[in-house]
Image (cartoon, rainbow, N blue to C red; front, side, top):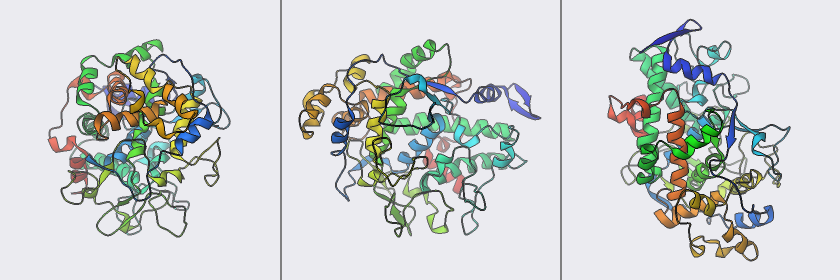
Length: 462
C-alpha cells in the first residue's frame, strides 16, 4: 500500500487523504429529500410527547437485538455527527435556516470521536497517545485499564469526543476500540496500520452486524447496488463536500432512543437505572471514574438473546422508557429546568428539533422514496385528542413516523421501509464518499469473528 510522510510518521496514502479532510472539521447539514408541507406547532408536539412513554417497568423486549447495540448506535452517532448552531445559544423553540447548522464530525465512519486528529496532530496527539502510537487508557479505581483517560483533578474525560463519557456503557465501548487499536500494535502493527485496521473492522462490523440487525436486508442491498443515489445527489448539490442529511441526524437515527431500557446489568454483580433524579440512587450516568464493580461483562450486551446473560434492547416503537424524561446529558443548560427552549424529555427534544429545522413529514418521505405511506389508522395517533391528532395524522413528524413504521411493518424488530432507506443511504453513501472504505475495496476480516461486536469484545478482553 502506498504511503506518505506526515509529521514524521509514515501513513498509508488512503489514511493520509482522510487526515487532510479532517483538518476542515466543519461540514454542512442539508435535506436529502425536497422539503415542503406543514410543520406541526410546538403545542401539538408537546401533546403528542405526553403519550410516548411506557408504564414504569415495561421493557417491551426485542427478540433479536441485544442491548449493546443501543449504545453502539450512540457511539456511531458521535463518530459522524455533532450538530452545532452558529448562534450564541441553541433554542429548540425557534426556527433556524439549515445553513445555521454545522457538523463538527466527518461522515465517513472513521472513528473520528476516538482518534481525534490522531497521533500526528501537534498538541492533542500526545494527550491521546503514547509515543509508541498506543492509546493512553484510563484506569478504574482498582487500577484496571477499562476506563477512558481522565484529568486527575476534575475527572473530565480526555478523549476525542466528550459525549462518549455520557454513560458507563458508551464509556467502555470507547475503551474497547482504543484497546483494539492497542492490541493490533501488540500484534506487530505500527500506529497507522493499526488505525487503518481498526477502521476496516469497524466499518465491516457496521455493515454486517449493526445494520444487518437494524434495517431491512432488501433495502440495504438495493442501496449498495445503486450506490446510495439519494445521498450521492445530495453531495452533488454541494459540489462533492460531505453532507450530513437532516432526515438521518434529526429523525431516523434517533430511533435508538426507543431501544433504551430503564436499567441494565453491567455484570453478574452490578446493575442500575440508566438515569435517576435521586442523587442518593446509583445510576449509569457518566462523567466520573469507573469503579471495579462497573466493569462490563460484554456477554451481557452482545451475543444471542436467550443464550447466557445477554440482555435485549427494547423493541423499536414510539413508546420510550420513562427514564428518558430525566435527560441529564452534558451540554444541556441547567438540566434541572424543563422549558420549551431546552426540554429534558428526549422525545420532546427530538420532536422540537425536527420542527426547528423544518423537517418534512413521514408521509412525504415515504412518497419521495416510492413507498406507500402508512394508512391513517396505522399511525397510532388516535390517542392524541383533536384537533392536534387530526393535524398530526396529516403531517406526521418523521421521527415518530419511523418508530411507528417499525412497529407496524416489522413488529419493532428492525426499522421499516423509510427508516431503513434513510439509514442505508447515509451509511453506504458516507462510506462510498470517503477516500477509504471497505465497500470500495471489498475488504473482509481475516478473522471472521472480528466482523461482529461480540467478536471484537471477546478479542479485546479475552
